Length: 176
Image 1 (cartoon, rainbow, N blue to C red):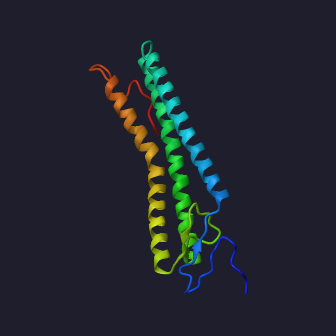
Image 2 (image 1 turned 120 degrees about the horizontal axis):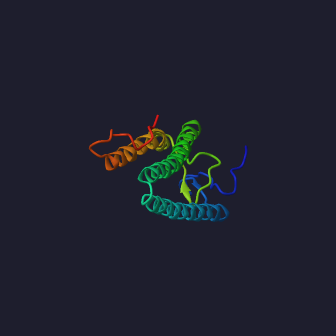
Image 3 (image 1 turned 180 degrees about the vertical axis):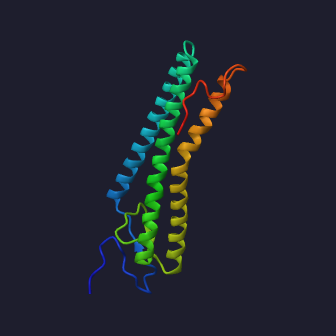
């Protein structure tokens, strides 16, 4: 009979439920990753403000060029947001499949940042279903969001640039 790894407490009726213990080393990695993601988000927002400010300055000379730059900048950021949603949705879907295959939550080999009671059976299936539904939703939204959002920006700018003598989309590139 094989022994459980050190970070998993054995399931014994007198000791209570099986608990997957948190590893302080993994906790540090998660905190470092969250700090890195937060730093990238702040930097990204500052870059967005800078790019949109540059478009505002350009609009003094050429409204069309400023509109095109705004569409390009917005499209880039919409795709970055969608990429994050696709990554998160894929991870949740992958985790849901692992839960279903193993019959337990958290699945074997998973890092946890706090001590977690191992759930089996129906409780694990409920968590797998929730993770799967959210994962599929994030994947769908991540695939559809950039095109929809960019189309909204194009329509908004097109309406703002439109004059009575000009056709609706004369100033803006068409999104295919």
